[in-house]
Image (cartoon, rainbow, N blue to C red; front, side, top):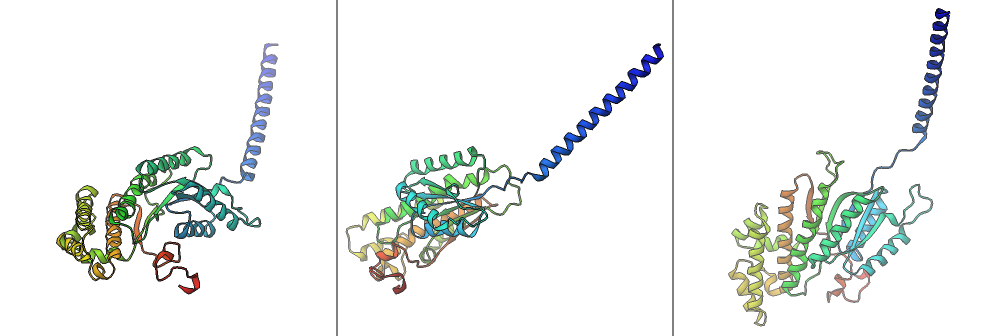
Length: 324
């Protein structure tokens, strides 16, 4: 009786074990089928931050990035946030295509209020970007910074320096570190970019400068505080000391400090001042390139582009695109 009972218990055990194994096999097959039929999550969108993006070159850059690459997102930065939202609406209207396999929608664009002359404005925008990059279920991958916001010649030197030099520094200092914040990046990732929109007048002013200035500004070995800021202060002092004097006095003052304007000093003095401001912005770009060796950093001169800035020039004022 005991032997019979033992045999029956063993048989029941084997039967139960077989039943459990069959259940597990069925469950595994079901899970495998579900995984095979569930589409994988798309890779995160590549995100680019563009300053001065509510019009002109900045808006055109947003349009090109979004229209030519499906997997992109832009932080559209505008000093006037209402104008930024109008620019976003314009992009949405022009880029939406219901027949496209990956329909374009407003999640591809975030509008940021950003004034490059205000540190608090830049800091608030950077905080917003950090929040977006970390809080959304499908957060974009921060891939590039384009320092495009600027003003043209015709402004006094202090204003030009604040926008075109110190403004560039504010933007790069705030957003370049975010290019390092993606934990999924590997050391071989070469997709990160920093672009400073500059002018051909920048290298011209650099070539006219005193050799010691040229070496300090073009090497990228110094810092803002020891290589750039003191030389900007020299230019500001020369500007203030000759502000109400004849042009010949200003030319003399800038010659004395080693930042002459070449033929522009007399023929186009506004170009001289504008070129100096762009030169200092480019000098900081080189320092950033040194500090971020895995990021591709460059200054780019787009040439003379038909925008509202160009239309302020007497030569082009009131003309249509085809007439320029």
